[in-house]
Amino acid sequence: MTNPPTYFSKIAHLISKLYPRARKIIEVGVGRSPYTLLQLRSLLPNVEIVATDIDQEVVRELNGMGVKSLVDDIFEPDEEVYEGADLIYSIRPPFELIPRLAELGSRIGTDILIIPLSEDVHLSNLSGWERIVENELIAYLLRSSRR
Figure 1 (cartoon, rainbow, N blue to C red):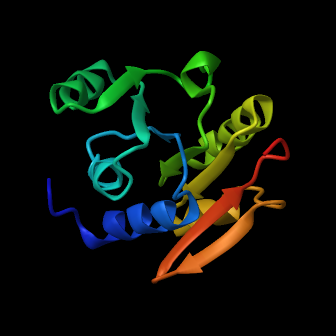
Figure 2 (tube, helix red, strand yellow):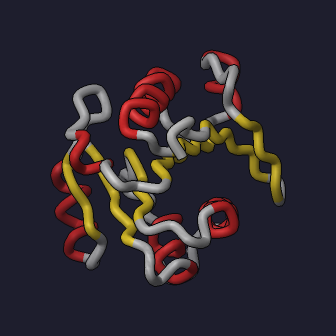
């Protein structure tokens, strides 16, 4: 896992460029593709990197790899997990999670970054989100008004 697929590496580089002074970054719905957060640990060694997922086995495996991971459901999030985060991001989240992520970011005052599947963009309301195109990567950033 030290050599992540290019796609995930591009995401990690974008995040490290946008948030070089972050204290805490959280990936929501990491699943079995922890490539971005593993890369972020190298790019931003002084940042607390946290993963969340609803699958207890995924969380157990990541914790076994030394990645701080927690079971959490974005539909009923434990907001304490996300407090103090400079960024919450999700890679290819199902389109129904996107408004939940936006609501969470608004409530706790944290930026939200999503890298959606192209078809999910058309199913989601992304008005107010900043579209970022970099190195063949398309991402959407919702900046917190409290930052």
